[in-house]
Image (tube, each protein chain N blue to C red):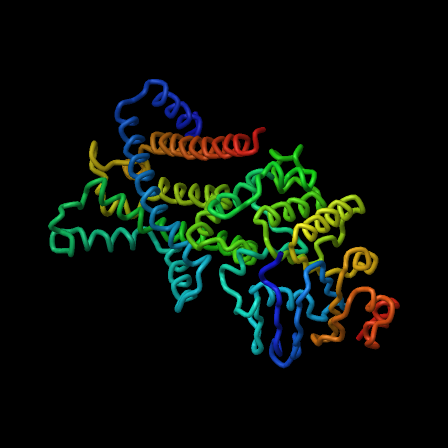
Length: 236
Length: 236
């Protein structure tokens, strides 16, 4: 049997048998990535709105820095977070190293720039389109900002999914700050890396397939929610 | 009765680099009714209207509404309809609800009345971005009139519309005028200007060439540029 066929069979076997270890890993992966995504949205969307709709000094510099941070290697982020959370680091007293919280922190740092920069571009285009209308209608700035976010909801959903994709597929940073500890910080990507290093290629590939299915499921659910919202909004 | 009158425009000048876009325009608009702004492409009509509505700032000169500089209260008493209507990506009704919610404390007209006035009652739950050009422009008109503005600006709002849509809009404008609203309209359609105008402003190269009653303007224009324009000659 080819390794791909073996991997597929293993993947289905793991899913059908509801392997407890696998479910635990999937659960932790989702918990870490969705928590990081939520925090990154809370931080990134207002930053994006600020960059997209307001003019202020050094705006282009801030945008340039955030754009550069979008491509920051995860291992570098992992290393920086590790240095700050290690016993001798600035936040060592919090004892967060090798915990899911440390993994969430690393992922927040990785995906916040993505959400901020991509949302700022979308909101900037909207601002360009609506600026004169909103001045004419005397729309207060907070209302205008809220309206931009509502108008751009579908495009922003795509941005959020991009952030989720980056978070769920990330391995370098969570490996460094989480340590890939069984039943504590092991997530899908670190488990795949571990099984690959042990030579269990079929199992590693099977986990990869499950990760892919998981990502597809989340994207599909988001698309369905988007269609449903659209239908509800216009009454069919 | 429009309390924003008279409008006093004093030495209004606006430049872009070496080019003078509005050149030392001074006039008084004292009477109610429909004022039509005419002139060839690039004459500065839209820019002049933007200055009146406070969307563009002149380099020098001033505009006074009933003796006061333009402020938020003035702007709330005005509405502008753009050549390309800017609508929110929502249903027809929700576009009007947006204005109603913004100016809840003001004396806004009911959504049903606004829709009925422009013949869009049956399309209330349609997404605004699925409307035809004429329907979009009528929705923009309904939105503007919902605010019960004392002064309504229309920047080539009937360009590219079919005769039925133009007729509907003109009817609504005449009624608004009867209700005491001041209408200031830019058009290239000489027949429409003859149908609607009580007085005419003619601009050429950013300068004011004529400000006369409509009957005088169409029967015996004083300036060479206006005569050439009405004769259908290309002005350079």
